[in-house]
Length: 380
Image 1 (tube, rainbow, N blue to C red):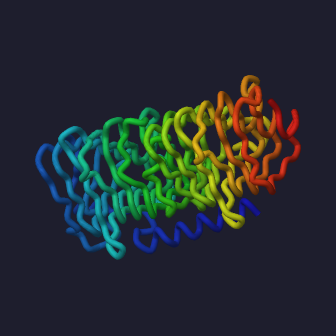
Image 2 (cartoon, helix red, strand yellow):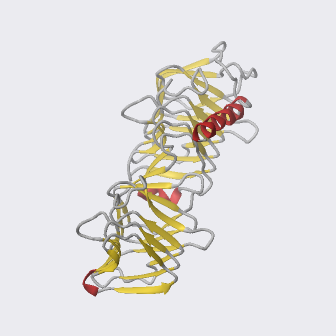
Image 3 (cartoon, rainbow, N blue to C red):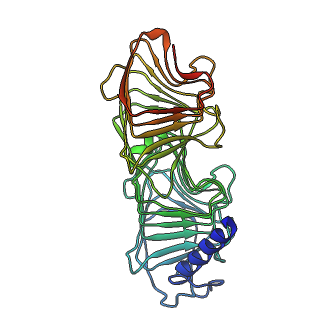
């Protein structure tokens, strides 16, 4: 069934792409070659009407040090091994329309790794990809994404299709990367993750993104520190995967319907901030093991955080508790406070909930279900 689903998804994607792109190899006849250093402003125009011919082709390294604007309807062919780097002082604005999308592609459709990347190293807020189809790249090992946002660089992505990357589809290098937003974008058939971000970018991820056929169909979140108020929006078609230790020192709200898969050893520490997870009967918030194995992730711990915003309502929390120090899948430490109701807590390798030394406040809202927690449902 899964193989059939993948084949069907490929078929649909091929149909969708060929509706706006030529189905086979694309002609370079008449295309303008872009290579070397772009040191003066440039507008790329849709000067060839034939959809089987490229308006422009990129060869080798194309370094942008000025403002480059791509007009609607333009097709840019990336030759094998080609890459675009938007450097300090430059900007790359690719804004198509619903009816005249911009296409940046390799010579063959449905084929990953033909070219390397579009890499943003510029903090210019004109760096935008909108109504742009990008496919067939991602072959660089160092900058391992078809669209790569470097540290201190800025880019905003909206209404794009990113597909067939040999690595990630879209990646922010670290927490210093500036993601202006990611919305209404489909990222499919990328060999690693469709999207790889730092936890600091969570507030810029909208709930309207999708993807299928990737190495792992999740938005991979590199855990770090959340020091700004953040709303973690649900992403029904691309759930999140938390990788590492996330420290929360400001107010974080998780939207109803959000699913967060915890990678092996992942943990969340609320210390000075708050974590508010209020789902509904029909849209539960879920914290699950990425590999569906009991004890594979650590804990959600509240350390000296006595905020009334610390709540789990209509949540499903399972298969954590794999830490010897904090043995509860939910652990309260040093006069912390947490409120739990209408939630399912199961499959912990330790306790379901631990109130260390009974020094914290656990508010039971009722209607909680506990099961298969190895050391018991509650511990101190």
